[in-house]
Length: 262
Image (cartoon, rainbow, N blue to C red):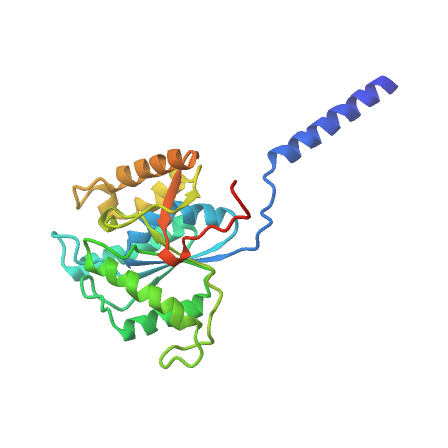
C-alpha cells in the first residue's frame, strides 16, 4: 500500500513538472505599444505584420495608422469604390492581427510633405503614446512611401516637444525605437540592421494580409504573399531563426558599445 502511494505521488510530481515545462513562461517585460505607420492600407501589414503578430502574442498593444487608403491602385474600380473596399480590408486585417486601426485624411498619391502633415501625425503619436514606431524606409519607388518616412521621423520629434502649435495633447517622450521596414519598393539604400525573430507567426500573418485583394493576386501580378513569406525565411536564415524580418534605423542609432574585444 505504501509503495503504491509513493508511486502515485511520484507520478503526480512528474505530471506537474511536465505541465509547468509545457506552459510558456510569462514575459518579464511590461506591455508595449507599437505604432505602425504606412503610406497605404496594406503596407505595414505586409512588411511588419509578422512582428505585430508576435507582439500581440506577448500582450503588447498594436496600432496601425494608414495615411492613405491606396485607393487608386485598382484599374477596374473607381478610387471611391476601391477606397471603400480597402477600408473594409484594412479593418479585417486589423481584426486578424488583433490590432487597432486608424486612417489618415489624405488621398493616394497626394500625401503632402509639409508641416501640417507632420503636426497631424504628431498629434496621433501623442494620442497613441507608442513605445516603438515602425514606418517606411527613406528611399522608395513610391513618393508616398518616402514622404511618409520624412513626415513620421519629424512627427516623432514634434510629439515630444512642449508648446508645438497645432499639436493637441501633452508631449509624448516615450518612443524608444523608430524602425524602418523592409519593402521591395523601398530597397534603395536599405541595409538590414535589426532582425526580429517572428518564428511561428506566419500562418496568422498570412490570414491577416490575405484580407486584401491585391495580396491574394486579384489586382497586381506581383506575388506579394510569396515574396514576403520567402523574405522572412531568408532573413530567418541570416538571423539563425526559423523566420525573421529586418529593419533599418537612422545612421546615428547604429552604435554598439563594448568594454573590450569580445
